[in-house]
Image (cartoon, rainbow, N blue to C red; front, side, top):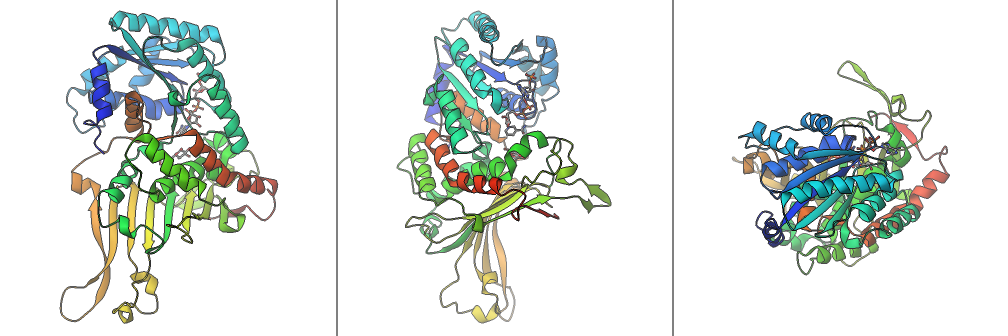
Length: 487
Ligand code: NDP
Ligand code: BG6
């Protein structure tokens, strides 16, 4: 889908003549803000994708002056995009547009002061309209208070106000619904952008293009030809200090219920009637509602323990000082899910995620059925599975799409081998680095494009699939369910 040339983008660009844009990062002293949000905003600014009258406001409880805040941001910025021209100058220009307000997340007076400062800076721009975008980069216990503060005391009167919310969106159906009600008390659904950064990854954006703009894939996209689909996430590092957060959630809630399930929904949905956000999200929600809740018998759980690697001892989950002693929280999970509709009846979708495994990898593996009456089956021996086609969409690292096919080994005689039709992004597109997912998603919020954000009913359907299992696991903790696995 074109980005810079899209209709939404052009409409917003016209708006640039009359509007300023203020981006408020709530929780600006935190890890996500420094790791992802500031670098992404700078990359967009560098590329000229933000309005000329654009400003960043940091907000958190930590006390900082504007100058100190700019130093914090400066330490997070790099010239990651291939064009490095005038990068230093651009960084300085970006930093001059950054301001900081210290305040509590639940105190109207703090938000009123933020609103006053924003009004002052926006007023000096001389634009008749001021658009405001809030990124709630804070722990869930202060989500609702901060959303209320932002909406009730800092909404613009002249443009749009949009609020980005980060996961976790609750811990189960009930807590997610409570969070939804809390947000709905202050904001309209069209103002809420629930981010799932996996939807902003290049290969996930490409999934619909691959399916719906190539004749060769869509006709095969069903139970008739596909034996199973594996959606795999692995990281070669553990919780590393994020154990306080992770231990309350576990890998099912941290990765499978959101990132992997969202990929599944996009992969399996019916063709939408258009590329409009609501048409795509309507199809995704239909897939989620056609699925049966994950069963315990279809699930495997584990937790990483200490191991030797390259002569070093790598810590186990329980060695992380931020993890409560004796925790049984799973750091690895695999579950088979099924979609009860005409297209996918009986096809297992295997969702698998783990921390502290051997490699860092995220991919979709589509395994096709056997060729009926294969004339060459004697060439493959008894293991016919090795001869089936497989389509691999590697989300990261080293983005790629390849199809494993059977091929004659060149030369005399008839020897068969499995080889790849291979699209490696780095060599095919000569691109040193792809934009980060947060860049794409922040730009979408600026442009009011909700295609890659989670709608309330999608979230509800996603929790309905996992809540019974999560509750069952938790009620049986300490029993036979959670084992420790060597990685
Ligand atoms: P942090 O723990 O770094 O918290 C962000 C800021 O919130 C802190 O700098 C702190 O600012 C304030 N804060 C921290 N704890 C509390 C508390 N108990 N009560 C009130 N304020 C608090 O979080 P992250 O930046 O890592 O994450 C932000 C959000 O994004 C969270 O919801 C997280 O789950 C989500 N997320 C994070 C990812 C990551 O990679 N870090 C990945 C995906 C999602 P101050 O004290 O100055 O107010
Ligand atoms: C986050 C999870 O949503 O995604 C983390 O909370 C995980 O636990 C991260 O490490 C992975 O994101 P990425 O983009 O680095 O693959």
